[in-house]
Amino acid sequence: MSGPWLCNHIWEHYLFTKDVDFLKKYYPILKGASVFCAEWLIENRDGKLVTPVSTSPENAFLLPDGTPASVCEGSTMDQAIIRSLFSNTIQASEILQTDHTFRKELTDKRDKLQGYQIGSKGELLEWDKEYEESEPQHRHVSHLFGLYPGSDITNDTPDVFNAARRSLHTRGNKTTGWSMAWKIALWSRLYDSDNANEALTNLINFVDPNVKAENRGGLYRNLLNALPFQIDGNFGATAGIAEMLLQSHQGNIHLLPALPTTWKEGKINGLKARGGFTIDMEWKKGKIHTAHISSTYEQTVDIVYKNESKELHFKAGEKKTILF
Image (cartoon, rainbow, N blue to C red; front, top):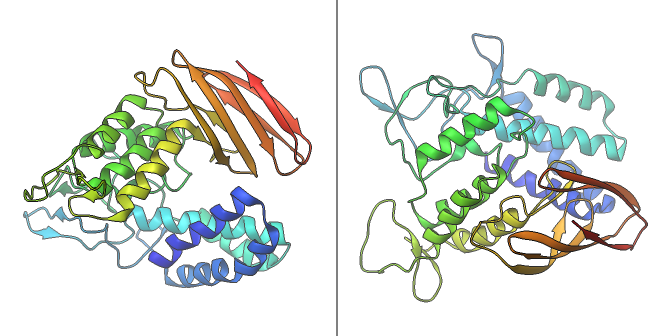
């Protein structure tokens, strides 16, 4: 599933830049990955489309007799990645006005995919069925791909949104460094500033390189992510911080969606939002003070802060100052 996951970056690049030439150049990769996944899917007993041989990376579950297992049909991560790929390819074909027949076929298959399933404890299921988890606080949170870096789990889908929250609570915030980086972003997408800040605080905790321990991460003295060193912990932390301060995956620009209560004052410049926007903003006493937003293109967008929303129209290259 690495190929379909990487395709997400192609689409995200387009969303942030609106570069149609870029999208046209790389559309064949999106289409090729979609063709592969569409051919690979099978119908399960309920008539839903699933991946035939599937895992949830590095994690396992227990069969009824207690035997550990890791292979199933249609793990939640597989299904989420493919749903994201199909949706992105469909939208790309619409923008480029190409492959109408293929687009229709892909839409039909996407709509037939096995959806998210919620367990008896209110959690988002990781595999095709509700199994006993062999390691409830496992470092991987693969089944939450749809929350981040995907975008089909939002507060517009409250049941799944809350199930994702329950699963993340179960996993906890004490884990390897790269996992805490991912959790910063996940908690931010859930608008849970306190847990996002806790994960960040755990991540920037210095650790002893001579001590190895499960579910313990942080930073070495040279500021490289630990344990062990994996650069996605460092890069992922910056991505997570960006999600705390700005989100745009729902088609609007959401300012300070997960600002920790301890971050009373601050300022940031040059944050990018999908649609070709650049944002500079300052907050005081824990509240937005000013936001300067510029747009590369002429367009209209909703600016969201807490429970307020303002619709703004931009001319190409225009910069506006927003006060709340």
